Image (cartoon, rainbow, N blue to C red; front, side):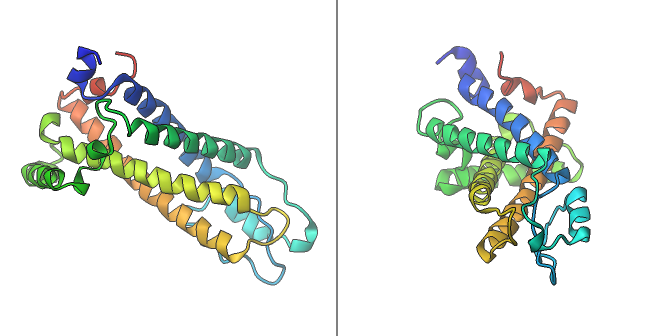
Length: 228
């Protein structure tokens, strides 16, 4: 372990993972908003699947109400990329699970889920009390006074991505382009989209916090840059 890793609080493998994972998630969420989902519908009833963040192209596809007798639905390029990138993210999450079993700085589950432990919950509570006044005016405390809050946010993002990856993998193997979706697939799809909405909210808060930290001169990005 280098002195530089100790100073930054994150080992180099974790910083590299963070950058690759962030890029994949942002691209995946962007594609998911606009891709056309290949789905066969009943002639008498359009699928009741309620997309929390519906893609424009998908909504147009619903309007057409393609009957099940019309044969397989052709997969769009966006949907195929979404599937491949989703499997890539699943592999990255498996790698992150293995990293969590190491002693690398910033890698352990105790580090990213402090609220699971008594000492972590106390630190998180103290930091929230310290920072609440600043949050009201969009002024954040110094990074060293908000470690547990930042780690908890990272942990919730990873947890949301893990659930998104599991449900996405189930959809990859269960999604039909030749017949209307069965009940369990629709249920998994609704869970998947709910988690996507939660993940988007977490990412928005996380990115806003990074911007505010940078504007206040905290140089927060330097702590997680992969090549330093």
